Image (cartoon, rainbow, N blue to C red):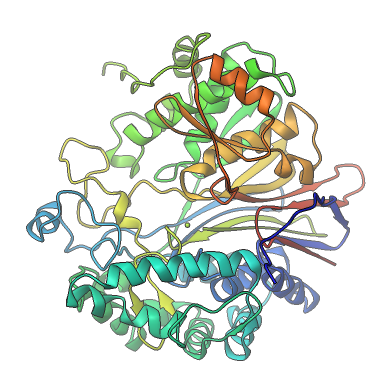
Length: 540
């Protein structure tokens, strides 16, 4: 039986609830969040439970060894948490080049940075949770110990990862040893588990239990931290137990843009949420009135996005290394100058001239008014491929985005945070929460944010329809990929405007999102989940 074969069209409807909603990419993770709500936890507790469960039931996209960001609405205020980790203090561009690399390697121990996800769980639990961290992690511990059957999209990407690491490990003996623990943990039978088959990870359960019992510190101090550092250094990486012990997540002020009367909120740099806001500002500054199903509207959105993305990749990094202030990139002056570049034909974007001078996403809401937009990732699926033996910890490869060119703002330096792809989103109107939203998937994320917000604000689509709308993705130059069900007449019209349109045969690269909106009059919660993955909404 082929669980990825869908010969007939199907649809999902918006899901409604009063007491609580958890929307994410895995049914068991959504249920973990609702379980914690039923035990007396709030939306923040439920978000932690869901996030921890996702490291178990969707290791193809995130893990304990990844980073996290959160936007949390509580008591009428939006709070931002940046739990991305820096490079090791011993990491320098010169050392990486001395290892024979002309640019940052993608896999292996070198691009491993300090993981921030466990610290995010502990920090938001301490600040806003009602239950102990240990209690909120119980469903995830149980899933890891008892196991669970793989869902279809999960099985698909698990096999992709297996083949990738198998190819990588067929190189040198050093590479084989580097990925050995990955195979021991995630392919214990000598092959990837298949859709419908059970998989369990006792080591994962033990690690989660330690994190819960110590309010997160076991990951950053003591024997477990030493195991993590030893695993990285054994394969030529730089991360040390001192790097782990020194790490703390950072509360930040979210940044926003007004989009046709709604405030769209993102985490400030080093995250790429700025790119979504910049694109919305450019699109608005162009004076174009969006029309549903209109090629001119799509053309203008694509051009706005490619300009914002080109500038984001050029300038965004750790704030003190940016050559331009984030405020300027969100200013009307910037938006108007970039909008003026957009014409009738597709362009090859050039960076803005400075003025002189892999991932999982979840959304949670409860009846008390708390709402959480939370995202965590190992990057590029399982991340670096380095797994800490016996712990279930797959370490991220965020350092792959560093530059080894000294003049680049994202140049690798010790203790520096790199340009980061994962971004949670949040929508408010007139100072009141509308709700959390997000679209995970590397560089698709700001593009997905833009399209979901436009679908909601410009075209009035319900949460499920806003997610289901066929997507486009700018990938560089004049090249734009569109989903298989993207309207052909619009693709042809864009082609006539100079865009190089590529029709994808699979929707896997177009992001996976979740939305929860609150009805301001009734308080009823309405949610949509991603039709492109194993998405599920659990309600109470």
